[in-house]
Image (cartoon, rainbow, N blue to C red; front, side):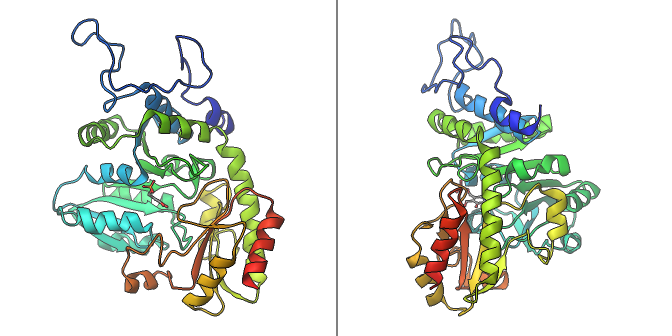
Length: 380
Ligand SMILES: Cc1ncc(COP(=O)(O)O)c(C=O)c1O
């Protein structure tokens, strides 16, 4: 089955044996009747498994070319489950430019529980090996990175992980499986904030993991069930519905983003534009090799290079909504330094380029002329 067909049918056979409904029913139930102790139809209690969640988990596994999907209450709950595979003293090498909430989870929760994180500029994958030692267990990659749009070579990371017998996990939130399939490039775990493009309509918070290996799936399922950070059936249904249009939404996101990025680059009130589709983006060739398109996200700085210039611009936008999050059909604009990445200390933030004049755009699927006109008027 090819990708566009998988978004609609992947993992969805025999979805409703009772009535043949085309979409999986929302099984809003906590528990399932048993004929005798243990005599059930595969479902006992909805933390452990729920048929609507299972339908979503199968769809997720299918679109990521994996075997096992696990859905959680949020993207961070999914990352939390991965980190619970490890013990105090274990070390993890993470991308240094990553979603602020992931950084907060690593440094404020898991460092306190004894894990050690090394935050490394992975745009050059050869920087990673120096941080590997006998305690290292995982390489955590986010690509493209949030918000600096750095690209990390997944194949190179996977070679390193295999050489040193480490796990490789990729946060695929920005790219989505339509553009990039990390498991095919050698990753062991692919993670999503399905809150973003997979859900696609800014109406559900949900996270996911997909793996190929049965043992790893069993260990993650143990955490999912034991810690219990699962998503509900209604939210599972919404993400399933979102996935069915992922491919067409992503096409339009990519087309609009290219036009907006090129427009921004020519504007005198804009300084730097970060978008991996530019031929002079430092890892453009890697992006071209591992992605089918360059995605729906852009970051840029104002030529005035001040907080005030960024805030004024954000306040003037009319079609773009000033809001956290990304990946919905509507265009959003954000200020990473004070919003999504405020949990990273200013000094560390600025080292990776998250300066006060940086603005992040999630380019939606509206008419591109309206989006460009909106930015033009806001820039003055
Ligand atoms: C790249 C990335 N990973 C993970 C997350 C966390 O996901 P959630 O907000 O669903 O917990 C986000 C949220 O913005 C994100 O952008």
